[in-house]
Image (cartoon, rainbow, N blue to C red; front, side, top):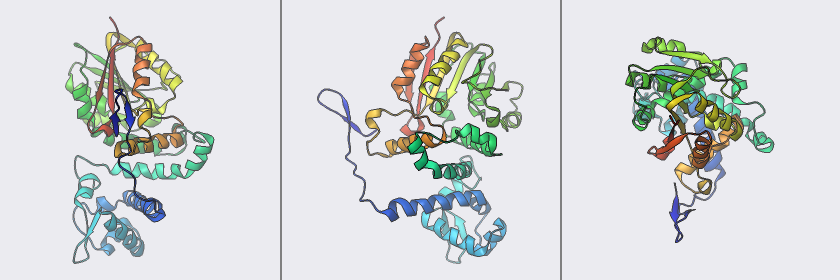
Length: 355
């Protein structure tokens, strides 16, 4: 975060990095077209089509079942963005980072993000109205119920996103000795529950989430060979009670989807469901209010996400102090905070239930 310490030892925002002069073309039109082109490329499968080798525009258009003229214009922008490269013989190929991240060819496939951003892009059309209202006309989870495939697209994106931090999480979380049961609240894709189970052979897990968020989770667990150790339970953590007790409960990137009052109830509900000596682990993005207007890439990302939440769920990013106080109010002790690096990866909070 971009800040400095004054003579009293207090952190104050620093604005050393001044933004460039405003330009409607540079600040609005080009970013809009760049985003639209990348999202369209993801929906059409441009990068996956070029996975196995370069193609002429005509060949690519045929592969995409698209017009030659439209494909040519789209690819011209993708070349300008650096995601495609046009060779001297007019063949198009993926750039190195597009091949690594978006071609569905390696371990770091982020193409699901483009498919999800296609949904998010349409939601952002309501931004000005959401600013006036102070929230969405309909929350994201209700929209998922109405739009087939939207929930599954979100879950796949969250799984691929989680793949980038799963090792960080495993290094940061020390499980209680002898832990045998784990509840993953809002675990949707099951990636974190699977990682804990692979780490501890005696561990059994429950993924607790909305039905719309677990459309493909069962099949994924079967593919991983973990169906006998991880089961899915449908429920709404805001309104429903947790059945049973657990040695470990994880609450990963869910708090920002709920209000302060709902999170108060949820954390207390999870604390009650912990066995004595059990561990509650909260993973979240946090932002210090003093840093909200600091000019830095980290704060820009946090502020953009905070604005996204206004449109999608009507909630906001929580502060670290909020989360820590919530854990204390639930009667939990030995609270630890671990900040991932780089900072945009988020923060882990863990707390124990007294024996």
